[in-house]
Each structure stands twice: as C-alpha cells, then as structure tokens.
Image 1 (cartoon, one colour):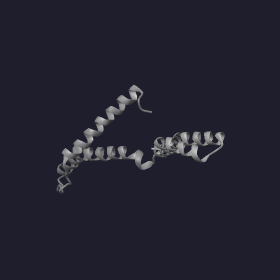
Image 2 (cartoon, one colour):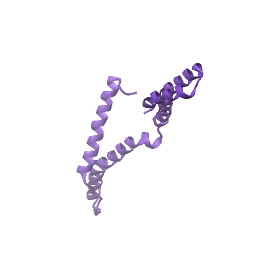
Image 3 (cartoon, rainbow, N blue to C red):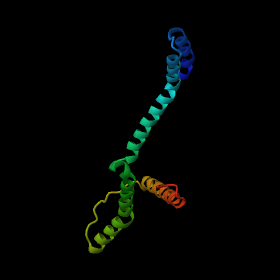
Image 4 (tube, one colour):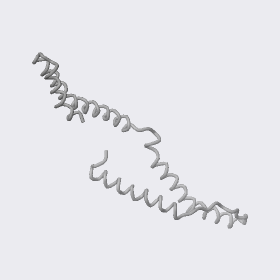
Length: 130
C-alpha cells in the first residue's frame, strides 16, 4: 500500500519543496519507508518467535503426560486388574466391581502416540529434529 503512495507523494513534493537536496532526501525517505516498516515488523515477529520457542513446562510436558496416562491405563487393564482379580480369587476374597473403561479410545490414543513416536525417531535418525 505504501508503494502506491510513493509516486503521488513525490509529485506533491515537487510542488511544495523548493530545495532539490531536501526534496531528494524526502523522496528517498518516503521510498525506503516501506522497507523500514517491513524490517521492523520482521524483527518484532522474530522476537515473538523466540519467546514462543522457549515454551514452558506445560507445552513441553503434554506428550509425556498423555503417554504416562495411557501407559498406566494400559497397565491397569492388561496387567494389574487381571493380576488383582487372580490374587483375590486365589485367596478366596470377594472380587469387588473394578473400574473398566473403553479400551478402543485408549488404543486409538496410544496407537497414535506410538505412531508419532516412531515418526519422531525417524526424524531424529534423519537429523531433521534438534
């Protein structure tokens, strides 16, 4: 948008500014204004990117947290719950109603995490990630 204004503003300078040096300095200032503004915007965006790249504990911990939750749920469903039922049955204790959950949802999340985990390993192997 600034580029479209440079021509008309330069024409106005011809009418109002008498000194040729001052006129050329103003014309140059107007012509480079768009570049300066673009440069300032780029520098500001770089600073924002730096701040976002630092991250925080929450951003860097969500994937391990989901992994641990899936691992605990997977372990409960396939290891600890059957083992507890076996021990209670073997010792003659009554087996209480144990919590159960939808394993299809867990397997979808866990499969996705394991799939992403192998992609991450591939990225590390290729040297794409840090």
